[in-house]
Every structure is written in structure tokens, then in C-alpha cells.
Image (tube, rainbow, N blue to C red):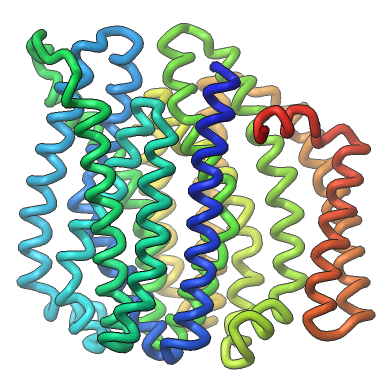
Length: 488
């Protein structure tokens, strides 16, 4: 892998993710604390969860399957790449037309089925949201296959900023959760238009299309999308159905607590998501070139840094959750603290998943990943049916942690089988990270216990970062020269 190209791509995606983090964080605070009531915020979260499930049927794994074949053919037969792109666009537009039309007709019935008729007015707008968000993500994934991560980053940045600005504008103009959703639709619509325009100009308009497509090419793309669709369906069950079930068994306010906690976790995951998205095509390239040892080295290094970053972050989240929620979102959201603390373990699990899951897809092991994710998603759904009535929103978070642990164990076993990882070295690294985390946690807790107010939160976080950085460098866990090379 070209280090300069990776550094450029990673910085672009990390910058876009950072912008997304800032935009999402500002929007989260403005909506939850200022513009929407707890009930309205919960209804928005419930509606977005339902629309996320519906979007599965517009996506169908086609974009990721096309990205995989684009990556492969770029190395072996570039003349076939435009045909893969065209097939992916046709599949996606057809799915959006069929699914969007059905959803528009059945939105009221769907709201009643999930036990939340209050979200009916939001689901009326659902077809528009599903269409634009599907196209918004489509172009990002296709550019990943071309290893043009900077364009994926640009599209994400446009959508993130557009969603922030337009959601606020439409809440002020239209009011409530409906106004926020209209802003989401228009913002993502702008991002989708930019993405499709860039795909046409940079990847299709000037491409050589004289050679006809290989026999069965579009069929192979569709066939490989099947396990990817299963994986995506499992992801959606994990990330969306639990929110729907909280609304079914409880009430919009409880959904608000759960949705807010998951948004905070997504906020924290941005660096891991950026790294996984940027590196994934490299695994496919190295496998196509017969360089699995190089791919293994990249994955092991990535996993070590993810553990070094996210294990301490999860511990810190448990300690500072209560004062952070109270100060940032207001005392009315304090009941979300136990949910956020339960999600601390999920922070680590999902961060590792971000750098593992996409790698398996580009290594051609999508079927195994799909089986693991499918089993985990069914288990998560069944466990939520038991845990939510018994333990409320904390039970939903616990169910997510339990099932993600099992799924991650399977996916790590699969990637080890593919790349022959150095397990002993990784375990030794994790033990060192846990020791650093213990020292950092002690520093954060001590500061919080001695200082009050917002000063305690700021100083405790700074103290924790200082202890973490110092011990990580001293223990040889953090190579500042390598980090500086990538970021500069």
C-alpha cells in the first residue's frame, strides 16, 4: 500500500468525519436541548429507525458488491470497471423506485404495526428520506471501490453540513420533528446530487467503454450482493430494530434517551469508521496481488491502535457520563446516563468491527461475515424482546453488547483464518492497553472527585488524555513518528 496515498485518503476521510462529528454534535445538542421536546426527539429517532430498516431494501448490498469488483478489475481488467458502475446504478435506481413507492403507500400501516402511530406523519415523508439517503451513501461506497477516498470524504462533508444547517432552518420554519426530518431530506439530497455528479464526471464520462462487458458480469455483482445484503440487514437489525422495540414496549421519551445515547456512541466512533473505510480497499488489492502477509501486517497495526484509542475512551465514558450529559444536554436528559454507560463496552466492540468487517468484504469473505451478523442480529432481536420489558432501555443496550461480543468473536476468527494474525502479540498489546486504561481512569476519577462543575469535566478529560499519552509513548504503544507521518 502506498503510504502517501493512504495518508492523504485517511486525512481526507478523517477530516470529513471530524466535520461530520462537529455537525452531528451541534445538531444533536441544538435539537435535544433547544428546538425539540424530549417526546419530539424520541419520535424523530423512532421514525429514522424505521426508515433505516426500509433503506435496506433500496441498498441490497449492491454498492459494496460493485465496489469489491471495481477494486478487483482495476488491478486485472480496467475496461470492465465502467460496466460494473453502470450495473450498480441501474440496480440502485430500480430498487429505490419500487421500495420508495411501496413505502409511500404503506407508511401509515407501518406506523401502526410498530406500535407508534404518532410517527405516521414522519413516515409520510419517509420515501423521500430513504431515496436521498440511499443515493448519498451509494456514491461514497463506490468511490471507496475506486480507492478515491477523498471524494467519499467530500460527499460526506457536504451532506453533514447540509443536514445541520437545513434541519435547523426547517425546524424554525415548519416546527417539530417534521421540520427536522425535512431538513435531513434536503441536506442529504444535496449530498446525493454532489456524489452522483462526481461519479459521472470522474469515473464514467471519460472511461473507455469500447470493450463489451464480460459474460455474467452483472449477475456476479448481483450474486455477491446477496451476502452483503444479509450483513447489512443484520447491521440494521442491530442498530435500528432495538430503537423500534424501545418505542413499541415503552414510550417516545424512552426512545429519546436511547436514541441520544446511540448518537453519542456514533459520534465517538468516527475515527474508527474513517480508518476502516480508508483501509478496506487495500486488503482487496493486496489479496489480488498475492500479498496476504502485507495485508495481515496492516490489519494488526490498525487493530492495535484501535484498541489503544477505544479501550481507554470506553472507560472514560463510564466515568464522565453523568456530568457530561447534565452539562451538555441539560438535567432533563440525566436518565440517559445508565444507557450511555452500558454502551461503553459497545464502543470498543463496534470500533473493532469497523476495521474488521469491511476488510472481510474486500477479502472475499462476505458470506462468512453475513452468517455471523445474521445470527447475531436474530439473537439481538430475541434478546431485546426479553430484556426491554424486564430492564427498559438499559436492557436494550445490554442486549446489543452481548450479541456484538459474540459476532465480533466470529469475525475475528474468520479474519485470522484469512490472514494468520499474530494472536500472542495482540493479546500482549491488549494487556498493556488495559494497564494504561486503569491508570488513566484513576486520574480522571480523582479529578472529578475533587473539583466541581464544568471545570471538573474539562480538567478530568485533559488529565486522562495526558496520562494516556504519556504512558502510551513510554510503553512503546504509541509511535508518534508514525502518527505524525500519516497526519502531516
